[in-house]
Image (tube, rainbow, N blue to C red; front, side, top):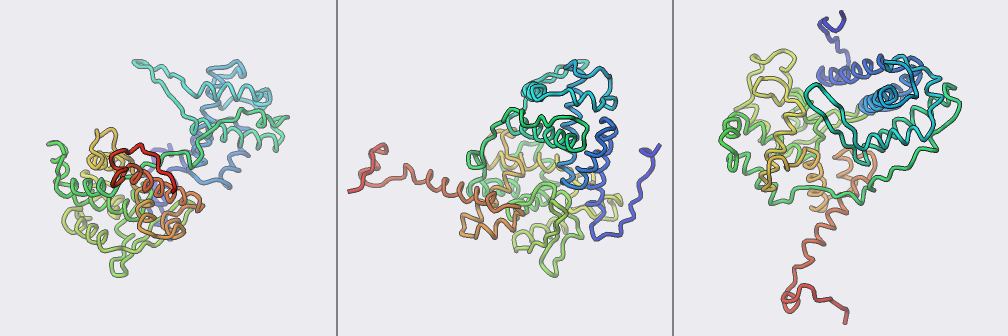
Length: 383
């Protein structure tokens, strides 16, 4: 069978093999989902391929498969036993109230397995995405004539927090220093953690500095290669969302950290499997680090900086936010930070500037001198 055959990549593009492989993995997952879904949706699948990003396409397909399984297992709207067998006439019977019932179901539901019961909870943002997936699907089916009515106007609204209402979590400068001190000295690590730290401290330091300096997304860092770096030019190449390439200048701190890791800790490429030879950051098994491994490592060190439990440590995305607020706090232009972080819209970057102003306001709120120092609740009036 095809899935048992070895895949040989003939790469004639400028992209490195690992980037193309990642894209092919996403494409393969999408194709598997399409094979599970009703045949009449083939036009919708083609629409997604041409109009949305690969990860968005994958999310839409997963949501729609979940909806189709819901129709079979939780309703009497269809009489078939597999999602593939659902017909367009079944979808034509669906009304807006049915979608609203589905979204309500998604707020909290359970899945019983042989030895356990799994409870799933979805917040407003997750529900909004599911609603969006179904809206796109039903609008397309209506345009193509598979359903006789556009029912999307009767979907209940789902309120999600506006960007300005969300709390932006970042590390303060002193917390960053505590985190970096821990990765350099091993301080506040458990005995078991120190066993791994001795073998990975240079790698971990380089990863943290890349996140903090450039605000990289975890996918961008995970896909970095040895060939991404040109030390003679003092720059490195990253592959971003929407297929974009960006060349980043190396500053002294990051350059030194990466070079120390390459010279003193990274396994010799001759001892690494061909698939992982070019990977910049390797696990102890000499394989490209996974996003999960990177996420757990970041969580560990940020928990030390925050002086909290390991489970309460921050994700790599919080280091991206830390980079943004730190750069803006040091007087850099919002537009320059937008370019560095690859925000599609400057309003996204502006949120970090607003957060920086709020942080300053909170910092001085109760920092009074003289008479006001004795009565922090005293109301200050203009004379």
